[in-house]
Image (cartoon, rainbow, N blue to C red; front, side, top):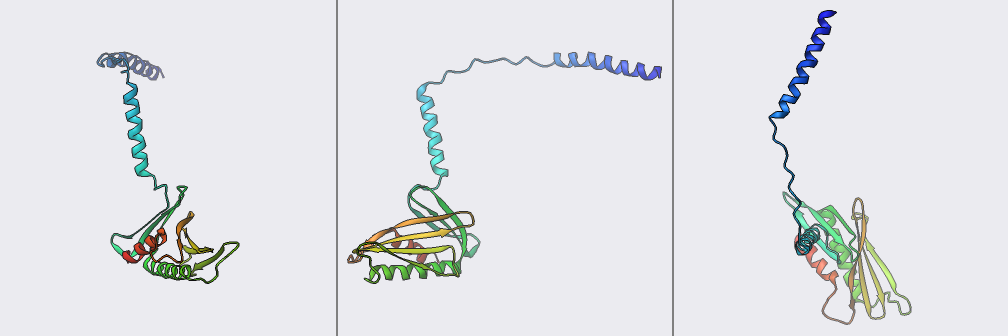
Length: 188
């Protein structure tokens, strides 16, 4: 027992002498005074941060993006953003992209004719297919105008995009709807 207590005392004594000796080899930390940053530099840094944030955020206007996924030509990524900045994205198989194209063509043809036009109140007609439940196109007709709405359901979000309006008498299509239809047709 006596040898055990002597060993404990020796360990404590050695550790007591060793720790101050170890700290003698370290250099003291020099505190440098804080640099004063000019207001112009702070403003420049804040603008830089804002620019980087704009790059990482989805667009804040009505937007539609579709592209094939690299290495898998039968799978596409789709991103839809509405005017309020809400967005939905998902991977969609080619079969559903083709169905979405057919839905858009049917909606476009319907928007051009005089069928189901509201005179006092707008009349909305919905186009969808059960085989592509992620996509819905609504055509709202009132007077001589047809307005398109595209709804896209992802795994977590649903976004409805106001895809613009056309005058049924106009020959040229100017709504974003036609641009989206062109992109869908071009990507497949």
